[in-house]
Amino acid sequence: MNTKSRKLHLSIKNIFKKHGLSYNHAKICADALIHAELVDAPSHGLSRLKMYCDRIKKKLINPQPKIKIKKISKSITHIDANNSIGFVVANIGIKKAISNAKKTGIGLVAIKNSGHYGLSGYYAEQAVKKNLIAMCFTNAPPAIAPHGAKKSLFGTNPICFGTPIASKVPFILDTSVSVINRGKIRVAARTGKKIPDGVALDKFGKPTTDAKKALAGVQLPIAGFRGSGLAWMVDILSGVLTGGNHGGKVKDPFDDFSGPQNIGHLFIVIKPNLFVGNYNQRIKENIKRIKKLPRIKGVKEILYPGQSKSRRYKKNINKEIKIPPNVAKDLKKLI
Image 1 (cartoon, rainbow, N blue to C red):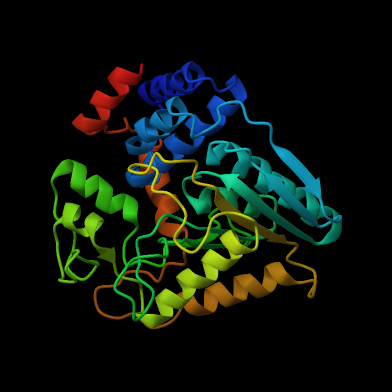
Image 2 (cartoon, one colour):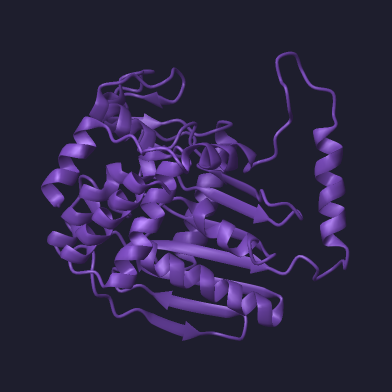
């Protein structure tokens, strides 16, 4: 990072410390927010800082949680986050899943009583860098209506998968089950920008490009009823299974201050050579074969998931992070 970005990182860390987090926990949070900005995901970056601080002030996020780690077996761990900020317990959870996988071949970690943890790919990448396969699931506040329903209930519930491919650029698929993630709509609402056609309906069920109307209405899932089904699957895996809130009970972190979110996370980490000893060779062949396919007009290269993000990170790492005026105003008040 350049000097200004390092200063920004220090400011964020100090803001979290000011709100009661320990030095190590504040650093974990600052690292995650800066990373989101560097991969051009501002919807999961500094625009959320005020929200985290507001929830700490209202005692809905515990700045000094007593996190309980329960060993189910050598492979399986259940964590009670005690209303920790999501970044902190997710960092503990993915590291535990990695440790379990290294010992037994597979690590399964379920987390309850957590909060928003940022980008799922941020955690999957930690496992991939240790030459492990990772899957990450987390649920979110209501945004998507189940197929056939009028009212939103499922969150945008991201699905994330990562695998080592014997390359410095890991394969990381990190996607919400909505056409665009809710954070992007929130950013558009704050900055007065339009959202694309075909991503949301207003509260009357009519298509809208107005971000504020979209937030009051419902977001559309990818692939129609299939996307709705995937959202349901993630709600079960990260909510029902873990002990977290589910079925529309996850509270909106920006608008609902009636209680903690109790979000659930699920991390599954696997040794890639469990079944075949030449996984690295096979995955390289797989990617090579796909990237060599004939391309449609206008496409210079067939990219695998994670390549675009890696290129954005390299492009931005030595640049100054651009902070929108409204976010800069929030930062100034928090400092």
